[in-house]
Length: 441
Image (cartoon, rainbow, N blue to C red; front, side, top):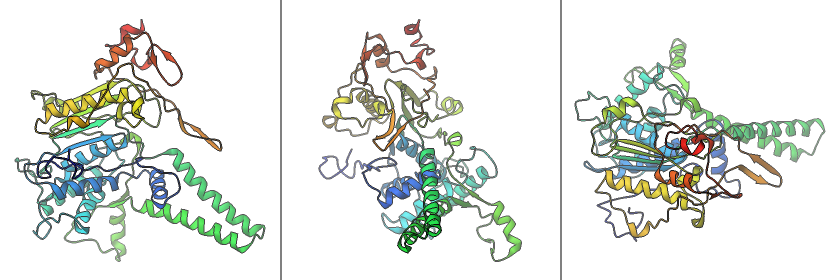
């Protein structure tokens, strides 16, 4: 990869871009960005800004013949999956609406990326994939976008998809967790609390400064929440050449029927995988037990069948031992033996599927160990003034997906370490898996 000028890889051969994503780079304190992030989490928003940043980078660097590789972990994995689907819908623009060249940076570039994400891809967000009229409206919005920006596929598909789709999408334990119930109730509680304090300041005749402070806090929370919700309003213009005149009351009914609020719901997360994506790989966590971190399914049998016969398997999803970050990483180096397994596997798959990829192997030093320490993310937060335990719900480990060989090694060991003590590795969710069933007899 080429993350900076210290890399010997030429900029003209390979470019890498990292977006911190949701939940990354968090620091102590209530910064404005963290407050807005919390409000977005409360209403089921959050990944759109990340998608815009990533899509803008793709547009700014892409040239015909380039290969696009998307890698992500956790909610970042969901983000790159959504980005891949958006590229199927929108492609990669090759010109502006007036026919001039695409800018490499600046507000015009960001406006294009914002239009693709917020107006096109996010139309109907949270609805079942093919629910009408949202699905047809989104497809029509995608068609209009592709025509306007010169990104229609040249494969005889009659403008049914974009001109460019990723060559490889590799994800580590995809979770969405885009609408956080705890944050939602905290925001509601904060608003209710400020309203009560404001009322109390008048009722008990507190000092006017306190009334002013509580009133200001109430307004800030209310305005922030309303502003966040209004960003989720989506509208479909039936005829962009003859837009409705909203000053005419006779147009209001049609305008309302073509308007909806788009926000993510767990039961309707985007699980689609375009069959035109080059290859897809998914490292799954067996031992992630948090109810708010369920696995987000990926792909369809029809798409898999369409890609049968490729030299390498098109979609491969493997189960790995350990919790969420034991698969995707982020623990201290001396506690990362399990995540090294998934990392080594993903790099190997990437090299096999995309032989032209340049990886600086001397910088990727892994020490995978099937008997490495396993973690358990029990506590959401554990402070003396506030303790919150995650709600538990073990995952269903589908038998159609294989276990990585190191899982069998871990099952065969007499004992393996976890945060409390060493014991045999026997997660109950593996009891019915055909590769592990024999260890539970």
